[in-house]
Amino acid sequence: MKFSTREQQELLARARQGDVDAFAVLFEAMRPLMHRVAYRLVGPNDCDDVVMETYIKAWRALSEFGGRSTLATWTCRIARNCAYDLLRRRGRREVREQSLDEPLEEGRDRSEEVPDPRARTPAEAAAADDLRGAIQAALDRLHEVHRTTFLLREVDGLSYREIAAATGVRIGTVMSRLFYARRRLRRLLEQIGAVR
Image 1: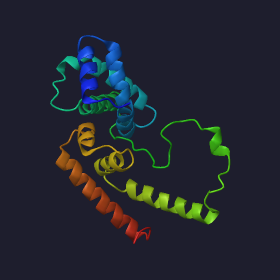
Image 2: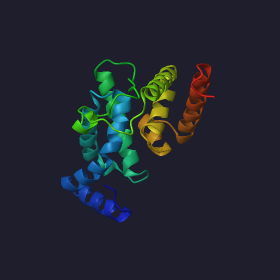
Image 3: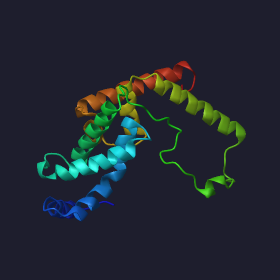
Image 4: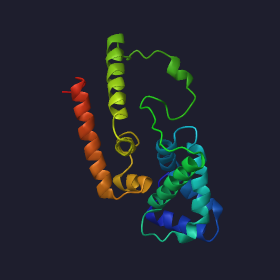
């Protein structure tokens, strides 16, 4: 759900006066973004915990939100900090990355089991699987910060500002990491003949 600037300001004003329902409405609109950020930083098993902790911390710190950034950007920073706190608490040193072909949500729809008459031929499916494997292998060879930045942008669709908030770097650094990641991926894929 998207709000006009006026609607968001009204909800924010009500939330600052202690209206938890108004804050919940705002947060629900941002939940998909928070979920993507948490998912990229801590993986599928812990992302819901990070989102819930983000909700609690954002609610408690709402009086500190000065409006110098958007509410979504501010909340992304909280999500990032919650994710790193969780990783530290559990003794993990590396941020895990999600495979491109692993689904974000568990569970399947029965309609997925019905054959699609427009489905690819076995040869087309095999070629697509080969390309997906090549892309995953190339992604695995990227440095962690470049891979995370690339996935947040290209897979999750975050803006540069949202990526900067989620990773704790400046927008210029996000742009630099994306440039490097794309160039490195292209070279790796060219080496194995996946692209020309």
